[in-house]
Length: 161
Image 1 (cartoon, rainbow, N blue to C red):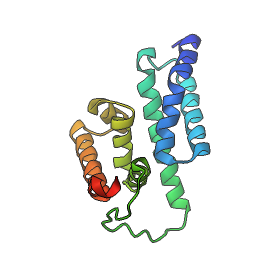
Image 2: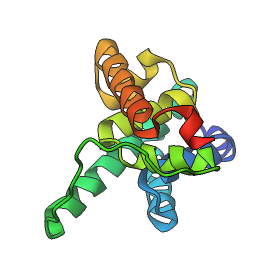
Image 3: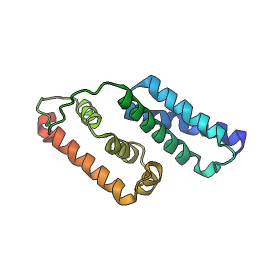
Image 4: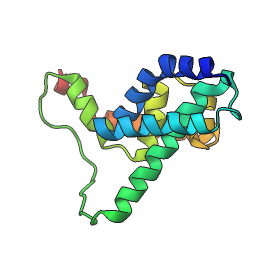
């Protein structure tokens, strides 16, 4: 990979990478750090990364960096009682995007990641599997479970609209 190809990767993929990480962690500063770390890792491995696979490399690196940070934060933070019982969205909201955002935030981390990669970023099951180091059937199962949870959480569309 040449310097021009690296700069082109920054121009082409930094916005999408930032949006992906921000959707997952919901913290602008953390998302910026993770994107910067991903590009730093790319720079350190610039000789080993094929320019045709740079997008996959960046998203995979960002994903793993995010997971590492989340795990580190969980270990260092005090454990809190999270009451994650089966919940249903009972309130009447007129903003479906707000309800959907809230529901996505309640998904387990792995399910949220694969769902965002599939539905928001448009990756194929195979690409997601490579990024998350999961088999294609595992990716499909996580996406299915996430969608079932979202359906249960949101409830009937008549309640939301």
